Image 1: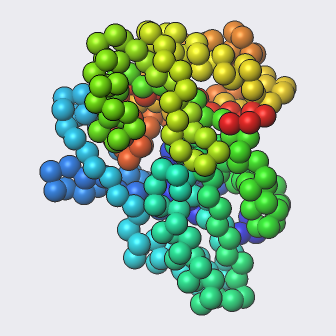
Image 2 (image 1 turned 90 degrees about the vertical axis):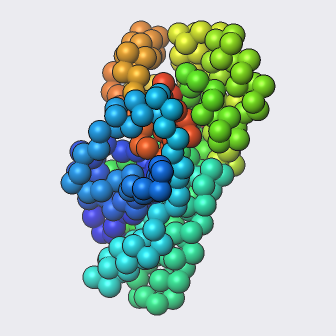
Amino acid sequence: MQFEIVTDSSCNLPDELIDEYGLHILPLTFMSEGEQFKSYVKGEKSDLKRFFDMMRNGKVFTTSLPNQEESLELIESLLAAGKDVLYIGFSSGLSGTYQAIANLMNILKEKYPDRKVFHTDTLAAAMGQGLIVHKAAKMAQAGATIEETWQWVEDNKLNLAHWFTVDDLIYLFRGGRVSRTSAWAGSLLKIKPVLHVDDEGHLIPMDKVRGRKKSIIDMVDHMEASALQPVADQEIFISHGDCEDDVEFLKSEITKRLGCTNFTVNILDPVIGAHAGPGTLALFFMADKR
């Protein structure tokens, strides 16, 4: 590649894709009982099933941005080695991560005036951000310039559709996404919200569906209504909060109704998982609009 791509751990990409494209990952952090952990450490496999089991058992986690000093050190090391750098970041509508890293890169741009330094806010989260990063990495590998890749992200990020549902509203309540009354009523009535991320990168409740399978079918309905054609040729990304049976049901419905067979699936990283909770199921694809 002619330049280096830096992203953050909220992209939720599998290690295999990170390694294949030589991506540089800035890890967000999560904390519990005074102990801090990085959500990504190169070469280390985390037991994320255990993380979600801990949440099911009442463990509460808080989250934080990537370490600024370490982020600056990583990006500067690339620039000092003569590399141009494109940072593709987590939605500014959900986190301060993008703005914090963009500020660092603006400082470094002045320090390294001969290097090309670009950053872009995906206004996306989890493997929605990951899908954009993946497409950018494939472009770079095929020989696209940093300017061409940055422009593609800017031109296409609002065609990245996010649809997801959660199994328990209590985690969204803790994060301030739903009211206490909605969380209590939803749990009592087995209501499963279907949400998406809007054009400003915010999390927006869209539908209320009674029952888990109906919520999954609702997501496929939205996909059928908006996915770019030919949808069967798309690569579909799915993130989940340790609910593999639901992933298989979602995949089977998409294949049956839309003919898609190319799926990339990964368990949610701990930072987003801490806010969405076990049983979260998220679907990402390219669409005519979000």
